[in-house]
Length: 232
Image 1 (cartoon, rainbow, N blue to C red):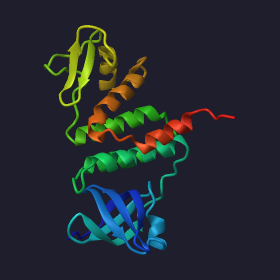
Image 2 (image 1 turned 90 degrees about the horizontal axis):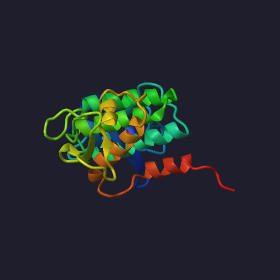
Image 3 (image 1 turned 90 degrees about the vertical axis):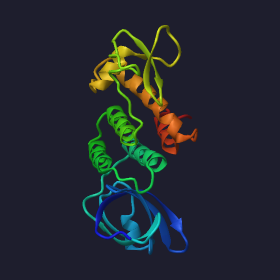
Image 4 (image 1 turned 135 degrees about the vertical axis):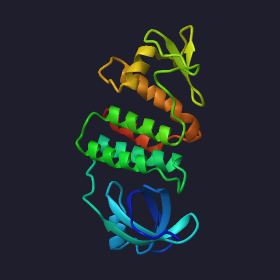
């Protein structure tokens, strides 16, 4: 049984039985799933993404019941590309974060990322930083300035990612490789370096792919649709 209030955000909700909803919450104690009763009333209005909440749960096992749900601040207003970026963060957490696996640092990083998205900044650096933090929190992170043999990454070198180990030096040009200079720029979060952001996007996709199980991300497909030019 859980007691005491937790800060929380809604990751996803869907109808359950006649008037309830199943809700996945992100809290410092991890991803928690609970039944929200009376979801068509006031409580249901609170259970929307990107709004800081105070949550109390009751019950045993993975599926719990919402005992109390209250707003603890103003909802973050996202629209257009920032909205789809927020949905992307939520989908990554739903797909990759195990239930009831506490990550208080990741919760704080998520809250700060939402606030940053609301300011309509360049999206790519924020998304890459969140993906990297998520991988690191789950134990899948790797060094960007040292290869799998413990040698420093060199700016002129070529490397490929071994997702379960790290960066491996390669002696000749092959598809899907990374320039050492781009990797070193990523390590310093230097997005002014030409090519670093594009390389970071490719690197994070390669790093995330084994953990997503081959199933495409719905939010990524929606984001790509938004970016496509309108057709007559």
